Length: 450
Image (cartoon, rainbow, N blue to C red):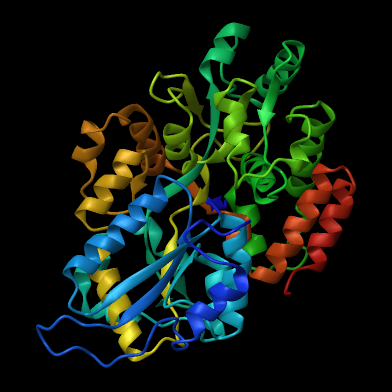
């Protein structure tokens, strides 16, 4: 999920200002969020700017900032100005800004249902003809990224970072101390819950205050129980799609985990934005964590020697007896995406397109993502992966991406915003044991078509 997730996804970063001021800043100089200006003469340096909102948090924040700085140093079209927001804050602010006609020129997103809503409301630019006129753009990407960027056959976004499958991480030191092995089946996982509880270690770290982190458990459970086709029926808004028996079984398995004290004590008050869930894993207070691949770079940057010393383990989500899914099915974010606000001025759109064409995932940025522990969604990074200090992890992800039997997009991004919010509310209630599996199914069926 996201996010990934993603998700990767409550306060502004130090570089930003309060919400009202941020909206004002992007709207005072023009609807696209930057001062309007005419196109620069050929060969001359332009003075116009295009605004960009992106997610805070290292290492991605630094990679994006460096990409923008490098583009600005060479651009004759104009410059890009970037403001960083924490994940959950950004999701709310971007919806508000787009609805008010004050979106930044370059809109960071997750594709899928959110992008479909923006495209249907004509809030983002149709990039189809522009991409067709610049075939090198499409040729540089791996093929799996385009589905979530496309609405009714038209392209409304370009992928902007790395592929981010959800991965089951674990602390090798904690496992070794308990004489345990990573789980390959659900029975294995439940056995580990009992074992680690007996050792005084939280079996699973979970930042459930953010809600979408809890969703990751549902995503993989449904995939393993019913296969990828079950959620596809939900995306297609088929009548009573949530009534599939696999959904009910998924809910029961989640509540089985809760009742077994699988998650860290107080998990509903732990927020993912502050990386508290990750810290529980790298400090050895929790044995496992199901999270987006983007957290590898964060744990590498913030977890001391946890990653460098080889204490971080990673594996596939377990299979379930009798399930239709298999270990090759992935869930998560194929990538994150950049769209261009349809409310931007022509000058701002020109700058944005120049950045998407010449600055986004350029050679140095792609290399920086590999260095951070992320597989960028462009071709030609095999040698960089082979030479990377993170080769074991990157090779693991790369192999999973290339052998995946399916790759289901994070649910809250695949669904349109109204239904996604209903989903997150019901997920929260499910984990709090305030709705039964049957009530969850009924509530979600009622959200179809909204």
